[in-house]
Length: 510
Image (cartoon, rainbow, N blue to C red; front, top):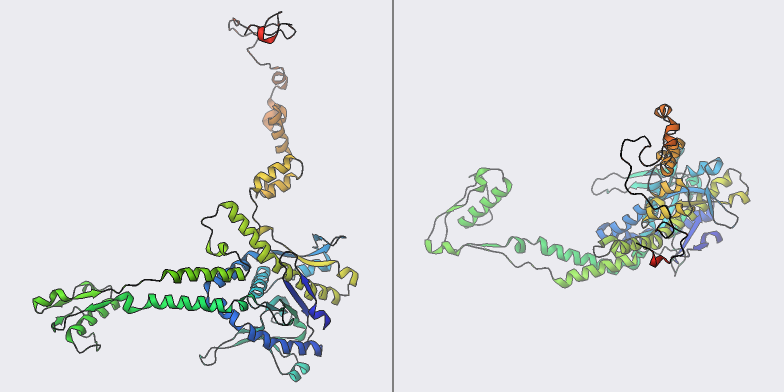
């Protein structure tokens, strides 16, 4: 049980996470899971409810998970100083690296699901997914609601662990779908420990329960105002003295709303027009006859429909409070129309450091302890070799850099990076790199050397290179043109071209 409470603190976020290997063949671990599951299920109910009801929360959590989904998970070997080394692509570690995927969306699905669980219930359970014949089909993180354990005696005698993939509803006649898991399929638990009780998950949404309830009630109140028929459709006032009317609706159109013949005909015509908008008669007016003095008393009264400005301001404030409670920049969800590209880049970078990377590091740490090391241990790897391998992430695909093209040009000019790195930083594929011959020709163009500029060309074989090499600038000696009347100075004493003259430059003729 001591290993269950071992925690690791992230230097950037200050948030503590715990990862516990759980072996259901061990009675103590099975007892622990039976005790913690009900508490996790009841505690996460409200968090999942707000995630499903409030669109801003659903978008904010989903957006962060999708950004984190760009990460690439690989097995890395630690350097001597403990830093993350290069990824391992061969041997047992390389094989385990290829196993880091979920049957529900591959590696991206695995990462997105973990990040979502860390934001909503702050509690996740790692399992190995079996295929149709009981083989390996990836790994996945489950919420507590997805796990069903049978009676303790049944668990000891058999493999009675179930994953609920579709809860169903017996009263609505909806089917329930489940998957059986073996004891060996269950790997462990990852959670954010509560400051009060270390085994309980500390969901950020749980602390925002009252704020989420206020936002939901305010939204429903605004919805009621907008959906009110009395406010939106208004009142059609008909004077009681008018008792006869003839509508354009077919005679078979029934209406029993009112005993008043006029109202009965008006409602019948309105219902018919709404049901049959394509009919020509639906566009005709209602024909009526009655006392002329009452004709002007027909009124369509529209009630004033105003949303309180304080309600809208309160709603915006509540959304900001919820997003900040989730460690999410409000501008990333609501937009940053007033921010320049520098401010937008800074907010995105802050989101990566505060909201996404800490949870990614937690996921890598948990996968290392619960999956990588267990797989290597089962394969008979020595403990010293096991501890030198970790699972880590590469988030370069989701990282935005400011003017990275200009950075690459300055770095290559200072011989700090090579041509391959320059192409990568500018988004150019390696297959577009110049060939050795193209490089020589480009060098010849820069040096104004015709031979290098045409190196390897078949056409260059017919060139008279002696003629090209003896060519001098200016007119040819046998040119029929008359000699020039003026020429550059010969450097006579005192002339502008005489560099050896003792005459001060200011006294020389212009």
